[in-house]
Length: 76
Image (tube, rainbow, N blue to C red; front, side):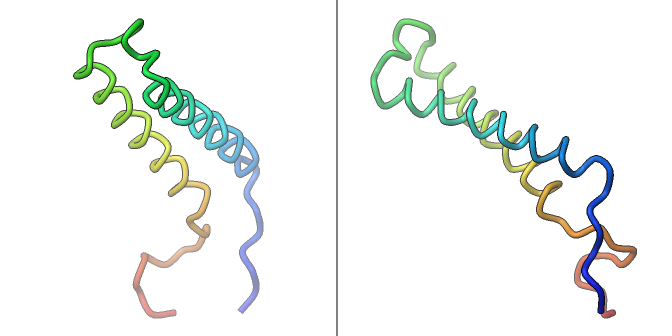
């Protein structure tokens, strides 16, 4: 079976993934250094962290999913 060829938007998706990872890293850094107290309440920080993780996970799924015509888990 041949390897899937990269699509025209794969590079764009990788760049968005990198951006979301940097955003998540910023929130983690703010959280660990306690600078979050200058910007957010504890509840707001936790909500932002969860949102950043969710968005990062969505982009990671888009980048890491192979582009094929079969449904996931379907026999080839």
